[in-house]
Length: 538
Image 1 (spheres, rainbow, N blue to C red):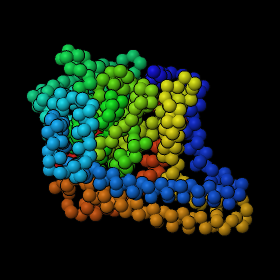
Image 2 (image 1 turned 90 degrees about the vertical axis):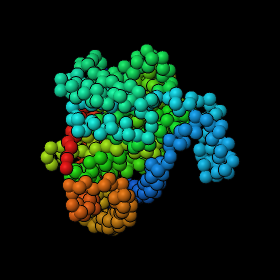
Image 3 (image 1 turned 180 degrees about the horizontal axis):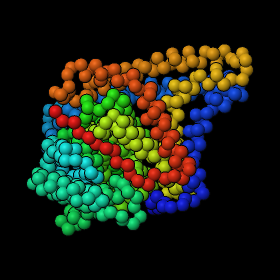
Image 4 (image 1 turned 180 degrees about the vertical axis):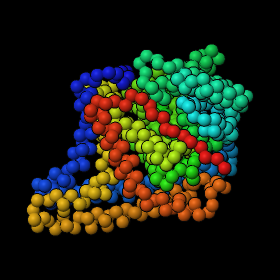
């Protein structure tokens, strides 16, 4: 098994090379239209045309995946997962029922999974426990309590099969501890087991972040399961942030998928993060960003080759124990968990989509200015996932690699491309078309240089079709309007999309360049900047 720990302190030269690589590529692509135009406007124009065409084709695919993913999520939300899960308790009877009623065509997928389930000799659903670790820093009870209630009110037997661990930080102080203990006291009778676990401050080898907190809680869960004589292979672990509220069908759907998926030991299960809890309350730019992030997660649920652990995700306790849980040295422990698992299990690892939402808060702080800043802090933390490029490269580009070479190459190329694209696409598509015209040396320039802004404009107009699809589906995704808002608030929920070009650059490109530049300079982000969470009430 490959060493799966992130290095601390000074990196080796090869590691530093790959830390610098994404930033260098992003800056080269960003300034390529200008540099090429200075040589010859035609070269600069051709570069921009190829770039725009490439992303125009990708945009068509993204629009299709948006519709596909939204449809899959709606079907999953409406499915009777509890009934499907109950069929696994007595699969032979369920199969006979389907065959007798000749409903195999309608329920062909369920029928196939029942057959697979019998052949795999999997455990009955009643023998499975779902353990939920909710990480908290200093969030108020107004943020935490709805999350706890969403677990209790789920379409799952919380009283007999749900374990709740509230993971809080010692560094939060006595008020945080008091709040955590009080929540457990108030709701412990609603779970099979509930406990508040305090993560000690200043543990050796850890950075200040969520990874150390949930890993400490994971070790507590391991010890508790051992004392109770519960086999770790009977426990599924889901990690949630303090504002995460799973759809009521999530744990039934997760358990069904876990039991009917071949080799669940080497799988993670990824729900769809949807940022709509407080979408009516946040400023318009934050609504655009939150909606865009929601749909990006919906899109990725339909692209298994791109699916990675993000935010809330689930994994078996047994494989978590083998890999020593999550990284305590990364501020992006969710995305990094994919690569940590990939190398731990020698490439035998994948993420299975669960087309059910985990509802989360959009960014909201005290005051408009603080909210804008908090949003940038959140996105730059996500963009710091570029730090995984060096981690992955130094484990894959070596003779004694433990993962299949061509599989690794494909995954590495997508990882590198995703971060470079994150930094460059919005800026190139918005501004790149003007570079040949303004920076070309030749007095006459070229015809294509003069026509390029027009070509780019028409391409963007056609691509607007994808935006129209997103706006329509975003409207349907909205939760009911709170009574504190009048009907005219609906108008602002539509008009907000004029901010999209600005938010794409400010909170997309700039955040990515910020994180990649810090990596280039070796100014590592070694502290998890918690996103502020404010709550508006009627």
